[in-house]
Image (cartoon, rainbow, N blue to C red; front, side, top):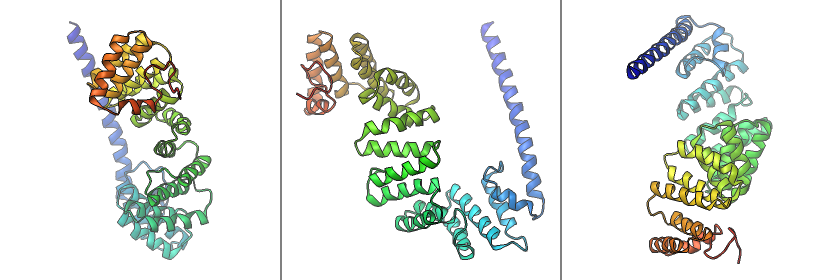
Length: 340
């Protein structure tokens, strides 16, 4: 009886969802058909330049092309239409097509809004880093309050330096971008990644927290916030975010290990030992987990079990003591991060 009722509920839910989807497609299709079927008109200019347009990007490209055929376009509007179509081509991962439009716009109005920034996007996609740098320099000379331009310059600086977003100048540009647009999760992610790559995990923590607030379903955000909070942040906070990361991540063992490490830092040794057991069930014989479980057992007074885990970890990785000492896990020391 219960199975029959459940099946009926599922079928009704699917029917309702399917009906909503069909009506949504009909409404959207009606708008698309209306725009598609009309001839070139001044309305195409507004539809092309509308960055929040509901129509698909490929159709927006068509609308821009149709607008460009209109007679009596002033040069500024002509350039804006070309820049917008170039932007759409960039979003569609067609940088060569984008550059064709953007170069044409530059011939008409080299100061068209967004022109040089979009040229930089195209050059970056084509791995022409120096040309991207020249374009973004022009963009910022034209508009020093372009948040996306600062973000792009940060990306370009990182690429030119050969570092993975780990230069001070890239981090500074990400900061300038966020000062102008403080709710852009992409920039928080890149600045956090830059800090982490440079070894400054503590500075990455505020960005990771903001990124997680803006995009709680982002696996990268939860995984990295979990790791940084567990190691150098607030262990109580780490427990909540690591539980979420364990559900989201394809590598649940990493999040479970960070849960165990947080419990260790909180002095909840029996819970931590159980958490290490759970982590090791997802990462069999992982030397750092074995070593940390041994350290936790030592703190809990289970010396026989601790020595067994230390020995097993050393058998798998002869350098494990030095590696774990960098995290402050030193057998015989009572405090994590002991320096002597």
